[in-house]
View 1: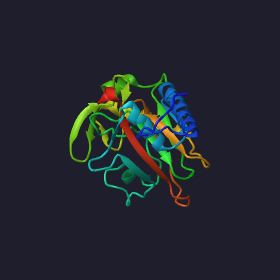
View 2 (view 1 turned 180 degrees about the vertical axis):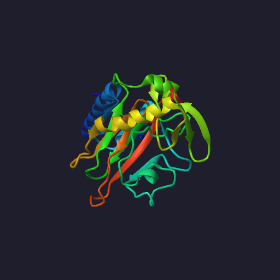
View 3 (view 1 turned 90 degrees about the vertical axis):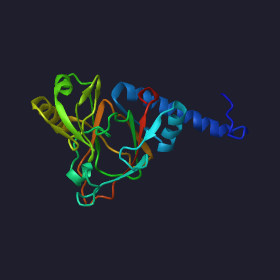
View 4 (view 1 turned 60 degrees about the vertical axis):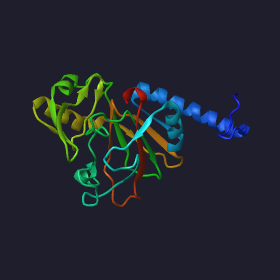
Length: 237
């Protein structure tokens, strides 16, 4: 085992080294699953992810002007939600499958979500590795994309990446309308990630090929709270 040292050059205690090496192995396994499946979970914290990000030169990015890179996500009614957000359209109802930062010129590569408490509303996950992915429509259908201030036109598909959010992307032709219908129906068969009730947990999402969504929230349930950090990898900067 390599002897670790702190920033002042002092040797790190052996038990701390064991913990750090264990975290490195756990994150390494999660990243391997992320590459293969499009998402991965592990028992840990966003601090673990941030430590890995610094070593790997991932850059944390804000998803909206003026926001911090660390976002607190709460289940809100439409009236409580920030204007032009997904929650302002859906309220406590089920959110559509979407890409975080789809309104940006370049959406982030990785999204890390961590839950601060247990709750019944699962996170739905859909990945583009399926054989039924409508690539022709994704590369041909034109969308009008708005961030609330700037409007642009583009496709939802970019090579083997997908950027889609029906709340900020308006379909302009039949191909793009087919894309919207496809993802509306894909929600029903998307994988359901139920957040752990007992241990701190992180969900990593390959944001360029996996869409995600929050299920409907019962107002009688305990408050739902997730913490999010989005990253761009060095090759995408």
